[in-house]
Length: 181
View 1: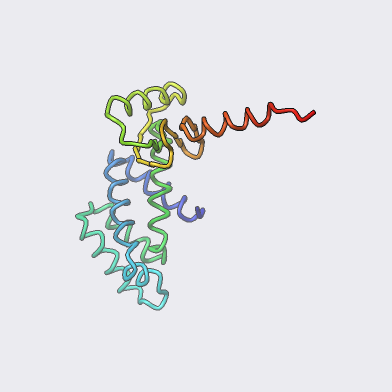
View 2: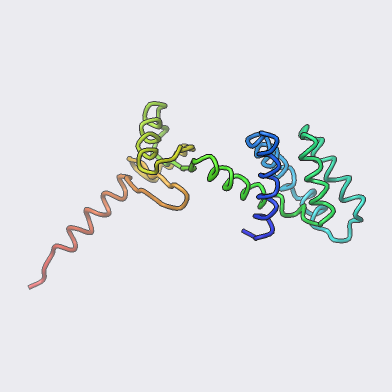
Protein backbone atom coordinates (compact mmCIF):
# COMPACT_ATOMS: atom_id res chain seq x y z
CA UNK A 1 0.00 0.00 0.00
CA UNK A 2 1.17 3.47 -0.71
CA UNK A 3 2.26 5.89 1.95
CA UNK A 4 -0.03 8.44 0.28
CA UNK A 5 -3.08 6.28 1.02
CA UNK A 6 -1.95 5.81 4.60
CA UNK A 7 -1.53 9.57 5.13
CA UNK A 8 -5.00 10.32 3.76
CA UNK A 9 -6.49 7.48 5.81
CA UNK A 10 -4.89 8.85 8.97
CA UNK A 11 -6.23 12.32 8.18
CA UNK A 12 -9.83 11.22 7.62
CA UNK A 13 -9.61 8.94 10.67
CA UNK A 14 -8.64 11.93 12.82
CA UNK A 15 -11.57 13.94 11.45
CA UNK A 16 -14.00 11.03 11.91
CA UNK A 17 -12.80 10.52 15.47
CA UNK A 18 -13.42 14.19 16.23
CA UNK A 19 -16.95 13.81 14.91
CA UNK A 20 -17.44 10.48 16.71
CA UNK A 21 -18.26 8.85 13.35
CA UNK A 22 -15.47 6.29 12.99
CA UNK A 23 -17.62 3.40 11.73
CA UNK A 24 -19.83 5.58 9.52
CA UNK A 25 -16.78 7.09 7.84
CA UNK A 26 -15.40 3.61 7.15
CA UNK A 27 -18.71 2.53 5.62
CA UNK A 28 -18.78 5.58 3.38
CA UNK A 29 -15.18 5.07 2.29
CA UNK A 30 -15.89 1.42 1.44
CA UNK A 31 -18.99 2.39 -0.56
CA UNK A 32 -17.08 5.09 -2.45
CA UNK A 33 -14.21 2.71 -3.14
CA UNK A 34 -16.69 0.22 -4.60
CA UNK A 35 -18.20 2.93 -6.80
CA UNK A 36 -14.82 4.04 -8.12
CA UNK A 37 -13.71 0.47 -8.85
CA UNK A 38 -15.97 0.26 -11.92
CA UNK A 39 -14.12 0.54 -15.24
CA UNK A 40 -15.75 3.78 -16.46
CA UNK A 41 -15.36 5.65 -13.17
CA UNK A 42 -11.83 4.36 -12.53
CA UNK A 43 -10.74 5.53 -15.99
CA UNK A 44 -12.27 8.96 -15.44
CA UNK A 45 -10.70 9.51 -12.01
CA UNK A 46 -7.27 8.29 -13.15
CA UNK A 47 -7.22 10.48 -16.26
CA UNK A 48 -4.92 13.48 -15.65
CA UNK A 49 -6.50 15.27 -18.62
CA UNK A 50 -9.84 15.70 -16.81
CA UNK A 51 -10.15 19.33 -15.79
CA UNK A 52 -9.95 20.10 -12.07
CA UNK A 53 -13.52 21.41 -11.98
CA UNK A 54 -14.88 18.28 -13.66
CA UNK A 55 -12.88 16.04 -11.34
CA UNK A 56 -14.32 17.87 -8.35
CA UNK A 57 -17.87 17.60 -9.78
CA UNK A 58 -17.36 13.87 -10.23
CA UNK A 59 -16.11 13.50 -6.66
CA UNK A 60 -19.08 15.39 -5.23
CA UNK A 61 -21.49 13.42 -7.43
CA UNK A 62 -20.03 10.12 -6.22
CA UNK A 63 -20.34 11.25 -2.60
CA UNK A 64 -23.91 12.36 -3.27
CA UNK A 65 -24.76 9.01 -4.83
CA UNK A 66 -24.12 7.21 -1.55
CA UNK A 67 -25.64 9.99 0.58
CA UNK A 68 -22.28 10.83 2.15
CA UNK A 69 -22.06 13.26 5.03
CA UNK A 70 -20.60 16.73 4.38
CA UNK A 71 -17.24 15.68 5.85
CA UNK A 72 -16.90 12.90 3.30
CA UNK A 73 -17.98 15.22 0.48
CA UNK A 74 -15.24 17.63 1.54
CA UNK A 75 -12.74 14.78 1.73
CA UNK A 76 -13.67 13.70 -1.79
CA UNK A 77 -13.16 17.29 -2.98
CA UNK A 78 -9.69 17.35 -1.40
CA UNK A 79 -8.84 14.07 -3.13
CA UNK A 80 -10.08 15.48 -6.44
CA UNK A 81 -8.11 18.71 -6.02
CA UNK A 82 -4.94 16.75 -5.29
CA UNK A 83 -5.55 14.21 -8.08
CA UNK A 84 -5.79 11.37 -5.57
CA UNK A 85 -9.25 9.99 -6.34
CA UNK A 86 -7.59 6.95 -7.88
CA UNK A 87 -6.22 6.15 -4.40
CA UNK A 88 -9.69 5.83 -2.84
CA UNK A 89 -9.62 2.02 -2.74
CA UNK A 90 -6.23 1.99 -1.03
CA UNK A 91 -7.34 4.73 1.37
CA UNK A 92 -10.40 2.69 2.34
CA UNK A 93 -8.22 -0.39 3.03
CA UNK A 94 -5.76 1.64 5.10
CA UNK A 95 -8.60 3.32 6.99
CA UNK A 96 -10.09 -0.06 7.91
CA UNK A 97 -6.71 -1.30 9.14
CA UNK A 98 -6.12 1.82 11.22
CA UNK A 99 -9.65 1.71 12.62
CA UNK A 100 -9.34 -1.97 13.54
CA UNK A 101 -6.03 -1.23 15.24
CA UNK A 102 -7.54 1.71 17.13
CA UNK A 103 -10.55 -0.33 18.28
CA UNK A 104 -8.48 -3.41 19.22
CA UNK A 105 -9.86 -5.82 16.70
CA UNK A 106 -8.57 -8.14 13.99
CA UNK A 107 -10.21 -9.61 10.92
CA UNK A 108 -10.24 -13.31 10.27
CA UNK A 109 -11.19 -15.44 7.31
CA UNK A 110 -12.49 -18.83 8.42
CA UNK A 111 -12.50 -21.43 5.64
CA UNK A 112 -14.32 -24.71 6.06
CA UNK A 113 -15.34 -27.59 3.83
CA UNK A 114 -19.03 -26.90 4.47
CA UNK A 115 -20.98 -24.01 5.91
CA UNK A 116 -20.36 -23.49 9.62
CA UNK A 117 -23.25 -23.10 12.01
CA UNK A 118 -23.47 -19.94 14.09
CA UNK A 119 -22.43 -21.81 17.25
CA UNK A 120 -19.36 -23.32 15.55
CA UNK A 121 -18.27 -19.98 14.13
CA UNK A 122 -18.80 -18.33 17.52
CA UNK A 123 -16.62 -20.98 19.21
CA UNK A 124 -13.84 -20.34 16.70
CA UNK A 125 -14.14 -16.58 17.20
CA UNK A 126 -14.00 -16.96 20.99
CA UNK A 127 -10.93 -19.21 20.73
CA UNK A 128 -9.06 -16.67 18.63
CA UNK A 129 -10.19 -13.75 20.76
CA UNK A 130 -8.50 -15.47 23.69
CA UNK A 131 -5.44 -16.21 21.57
CA UNK A 132 -5.08 -12.64 20.20
CA UNK A 133 -6.51 -10.65 23.10
CA UNK A 134 -8.54 -8.70 20.52
CA UNK A 135 -12.05 -8.70 19.16
CA UNK A 136 -12.18 -10.99 16.12
CA UNK A 137 -14.37 -10.06 13.16
CA UNK A 138 -14.77 -13.29 11.22
CA UNK A 139 -15.82 -13.91 7.65
CA UNK A 140 -16.81 -17.52 6.94
CA UNK A 141 -16.01 -18.99 3.52
CA UNK A 142 -16.77 -22.47 2.20
CA UNK A 143 -13.80 -24.20 0.50
CA UNK A 144 -14.79 -27.75 -0.44
CA UNK A 145 -11.18 -28.66 -1.23
CA UNK A 146 -10.44 -28.75 2.52
CA UNK A 147 -12.32 -32.06 2.98
CA UNK A 148 -13.00 -31.18 6.64
CA UNK A 149 -11.77 -29.02 9.51
CA UNK A 150 -11.09 -25.29 9.28
CA UNK A 151 -8.37 -22.90 8.18
CA UNK A 152 -8.27 -19.54 9.97
CA UNK A 153 -6.33 -16.63 8.50
CA UNK A 154 -5.90 -13.70 10.87
CA UNK A 155 -4.14 -10.84 9.14
CA UNK A 156 -1.76 -13.12 7.27
CA UNK A 157 -1.15 -15.63 10.06
CA UNK A 158 -2.67 -18.97 9.04
CA UNK A 159 -3.86 -21.64 11.47
CA UNK A 160 -4.48 -24.74 9.37
CA UNK A 161 -6.67 -27.33 11.08
CA UNK A 162 -7.99 -28.77 7.84
CA UNK A 163 -8.31 -32.49 7.26
CA UNK A 164 -6.25 -32.07 4.09
CA UNK A 165 -3.37 -30.60 6.12
CA UNK A 166 -3.68 -33.28 8.81
CA UNK A 167 -3.53 -36.03 6.16
CA UNK A 168 -0.50 -34.38 4.54
CA UNK A 169 1.22 -34.14 7.92
CA UNK A 170 0.48 -37.81 8.61
CA UNK A 171 1.82 -38.81 5.18
CA UNK A 172 4.98 -36.77 5.80
CA UNK A 173 5.43 -38.45 9.19
CA UNK A 174 5.04 -41.89 7.66
CA UNK A 175 7.39 -41.15 4.79
CA UNK A 176 9.91 -39.52 7.13
CA UNK A 177 9.98 -42.46 9.53
CA UNK A 178 10.98 -44.97 6.85
CA UNK A 179 14.57 -46.05 6.85
CA UNK A 180 16.25 -47.67 3.95
CA UNK A 181 18.80 -50.23 5.15
